[in-house]
Image 1 (cartoon, rainbow, N blue to C red):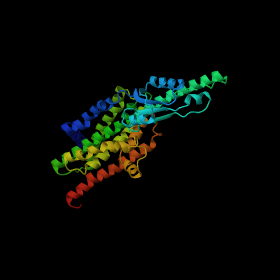
Image 2: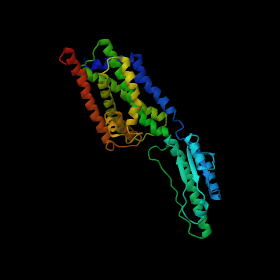
Image 3: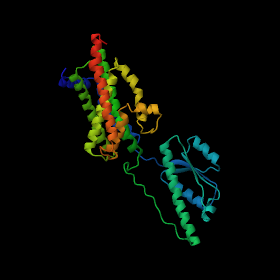
Image 4: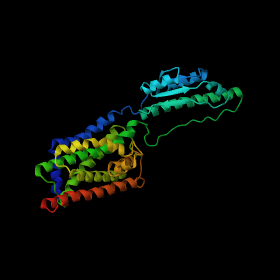
Length: 372
C-alpha cells in the first residue's frame, strides 16, 4: 500500500469507528473541560486550624487575631493542650496546629528568642502548605510588631523594616490547577493516542488475522496518527489553556518543535505496543491501569523514585514529554534549555520507531512465511 493510501485509510478507519472517535477525539475534548473543573478555585482558602495558647498574654492574643484574619486559615478550635490538638489533626478535623509556648511575651519583652511550633498534616501536602504559609505570615507580622514595640519602650533603634514580597515567575496565580493541569495534559494526549491506536490494531488483527505493513504503509499509518496527535496537542496548548486561563509563557516555534518530538515518540511507542495485541478489548483492559503510574513516574509529583522505577520511567515518552512541554509552554524555556528532554524524546522516537518497524514490517512478514 502507498503512503497516501495508508494515510487516507487510517483516517477513514478512525472516523468510521465510533469507539476510535470517542477515544482519539471526543475524550480529548471531554478531558479538557472535565479534568480542570476540579481546580477552578485554584487556591484553597479558609482551611481549618487550631491554636494552643499556653502563654495567655496580650502578644499571644494579638497573634491569634492575626491567624483568624488570614485568608488561608480558619481558626476552628483552641484546645487547652497539645494532645487535644494532635487528636484533631489525626482525625483530619484540622489541617495545622499553632502552639504558643508559655513565657513567649516575657521573652519578647526581654529581647530573647522564643520558640513557636507549627504542625501540619502530611495527608494533603497542598492544604498543609497553604495553612503553614498562612500561619507563618501571621507569625512574621506579629514578630515585627513586637520588635517595634520593644524598641519604642527601651529607646533602642528600631529594627529595619523588611518585607518579603514573593513574585512567582511562572505560575503567576500560584494556583494548583495551573501547576497540575499542564503537566497532566501530555499524559492525556499520550494515553488517548495509545488507547485508540492499540484498539484499532487489535481490530485489524481480529478482522484480517494479521498486522503487516510495507514501509510506505507503515509511514502513512504513523503520519495519520501523528496528525491527529498534533491537532489534539495544539488544541490543549492553544485554545484550552487560553479558555481555562492557564499560564502560557513560551514561543510558538519552541512549542511546535517540542510537541512534534513528543507526538512522534508517542506514536512510535503506541505502534510498537499495539503490535503485541490480538484482540480489541484486551488492549484497553490491560492499558487502562497505566495512566496514573505513568504520571507519577514522570517525576512531576515523585521526583526521586527508586532507581529501578527511575530507569523504567525513562522508557516512557511522557517522562521527557512533560519536562519539555511544561518547560517551553509554561516556563518560557528556549529549545537550548530543554535540549536534554528533546534529545530524550528524539531517541525514544527513533528506538520505538525501529522496534515498531521490525515488528510490523519484518517480523510479522517473516512469521507468515514460516521463517520465524
